[in-house]
Amino acid sequence: MIFAYPQMFWLLLLLPLLALWQGYRRRGGEPTLQVSSTLPFVGLSSGLRAYLRPLPLVLRLLAMALLVVALARPQTRDDWTDITTEGIDIVLAMDISSSMLARDFQPNRLEVAKEMAARFIINRPNDRVGLVVFSGESFTQSPLTTDHPVVINQLSELQSGMLEDGTAIGMGLATSVSRLKDSQAISKVVVLLTDGVNNKGTIAPLTAAEIAQTLGVRVYTIGVGSYGKALFPVQTAFGTQYQQMDVTIDEEMLGQISQMTGGKYFRADSEEALRSIYDQIDQLEKSKIEEQQQSRRTEEFWPFVAWASLLVLLELVLRHTLLRTIP
Image (cartoon, rainbow, N blue to C red):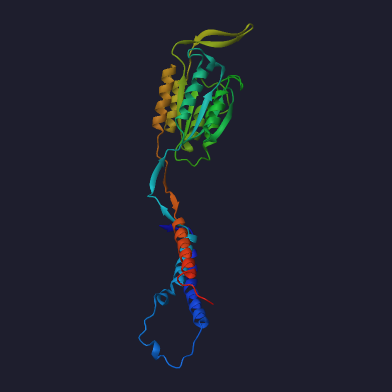
């Protein structure tokens, strides 16, 4: 048993003083009777009331002692329990260029990528997750947060055309790394998904990878797209038309980024493959980050209050019945 306010026990020092004061008061207040001889009282035994006379004071002092214990707030504590949490800071960097509307995934690459990313976030309740989007430029859609529904909602609203078209992989990675530069997490991760070749931006992908390596950020890269040809959207005088075009992904560069930072490169040529890739990353990034000890404290002052009340009640009953005095 532990006490929330152990300093309250100093009040117990007042109880002996109170007992002495009561004794002095009783001695000075008792009536006296002068007799010529004590011989008639020799051999007489004291009655029960004489022995019980100090009892009300004893009961009162015990009640006050119990109330002092109650004021100290006694508590019981359950056994300590070790709880291990898995917490990692993760930024999802997603390509939203027009090529992500290619129909080798149904309904297109972007919608499938959004669905799989949302599923990945849901499976990691203890992580802080951020969202960066890029095409010809990059933008932080959501900073690192544990409010996953907000991130998933931001993810669902992504559309191609929100930014200048193109594929600025270096800018997307650099923006993602900048969101992690002040992170205190033991594990800092970027999951970068793209379907093309870097053709825009002021930062080269490998330069961004060097920055990530310096800051201890691990980068997993995902190349999205089937092998061969796919239906790509093309702007014509008659509006957006879909044409069969070669699928081109700079896998060598994406592999270099992951290798430099201690991550891994994956190729997703189907929806099932992309789902499997996110599952693999989920398993690779299961790290025990923090161990906490928790205990539950239960208040135990009520029994002391109850016993004190009972003693006070008993004192009043004795004082007004068996030990009643007539003025």
